[in-house]
Length: 198
Image (cartoon, rainbow, N blue to C red; front, side):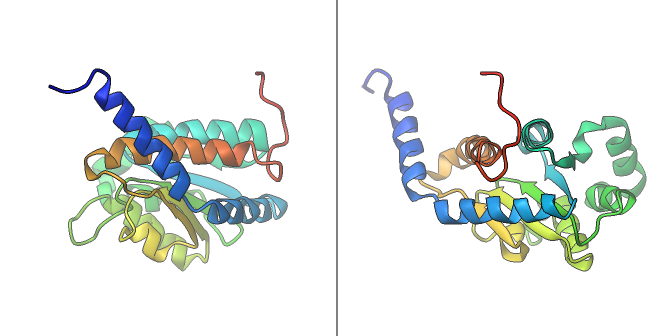
């Protein structure tokens, strides 16, 4: 018989292991790279699918409100996004949105994803196309993902890979740590311009 609270205890032990293993130097490097984007009046474009789309929307709020970044996510406009999916296809939905947004070398895309895109498995193809477009426009590629072999990690400039400590919990713990990491960034002394209410 399982011990009372076994899952909860195990889950938080694994959260602690991830915290111990995560690359904090790389997170600090990302903060410095983001500062450069802001200093040159570049924009941030957050991209995510599923739960990561919700995280992208929340991150846009925090980076705008607390850090004075101009930033956007395509998933905040469901009308435009679904029109693009319907007319141009899922694969091109993000890259075509970035084209209309006049993505350029002063900007950065910031990817939230568990797998990070996988061509062979045909997963998150819209993220893959967005990464390819960012490469063509010489735009910086940042991200927080859960798989080392993800397309975003292979092609990105600074991508934080959340350590995998339990395959079964890869999705919830990656998406949870996306929030931990972006909150670390928006409260970073290099980036935060405005205080939080609490």
